Image 1 (cartoon, rainbow, N blue to C red):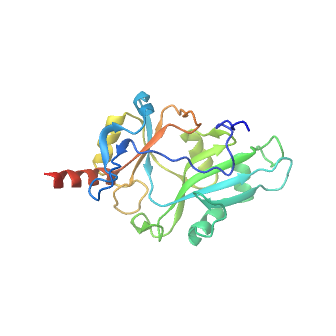
Image 2 (cartoon, helix red, strand yellow):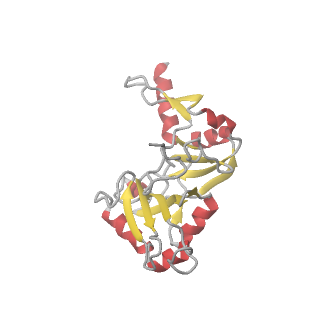
Image 3 (spheres, rainbow, N blue to C red):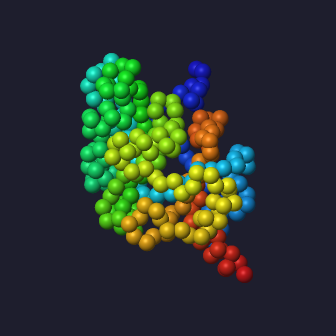
Amino acid sequence: MAEIHPLIYKFPMRYPKINTLFMRDKFITVKRKGIIHEGILSEEAFKTIKFWNVSEKIHGENTRIYIDFIPGNLEPPHVWIGSRNDTDTPNINEDLLADIKTHLTEDALLRAFTNGSFSTGNCPRHVMIFGEGFGGDIHHGHNYRDSPEFIVFDIVIDNWFLEYNSVADISRKLNLQSVPIINKNMNTDDIVDYVKSQPDSIVANKSHVMEGVVATSSPLLLTRKGYPVRFKLKTKDFRDLDSVTETDH
């Protein structure tokens, strides 16, 4: 059987893994395992990108929404809400799930994805909305806010990963927030310096150090597997690196 071309995505999609900027130590020792090797990139492709769009990385529950616009069906599409690996999972925080559902009304879906009706030709075939549930009881989310919320970080329509402006526009039409952009044209060295500075979270209602950043190539480029060229970098990576360096002396 011929291999399916990676740009023909299988829905509902799983969100592609994002590698950290630097290689991590793979030695199985309590002291060094998982520590980054600053300066040694985890992917050669990162060397070719001059500028990156940088957004805040949110610590929470990876959540995805699949909207299936059934061809020829004038009724509202089918909507599935699940975790990173499952659909209709019972493991999603109940308050978060209830909040997401309030945003996926028929009017909101019409406004965000169609030319006025769900008929064939007026809407896409598949939509994936990727985001993070955060706040409240989600992974000690009270550092962000006291009640759980959903924030969008990526949208795929049919076989297209959308640029940030389109993601933000669709999120607004659904009355959802999207991850804030920190800078639209940062080079790698500036990103590293920014994360090292241990900046406060932009989305948090309380003073709270940002988990890290996600950097996406500007303009948006795809890997050979059809996924965006991007990396993550956590503030904790540098705290851990400093801790290990101090004990080495």
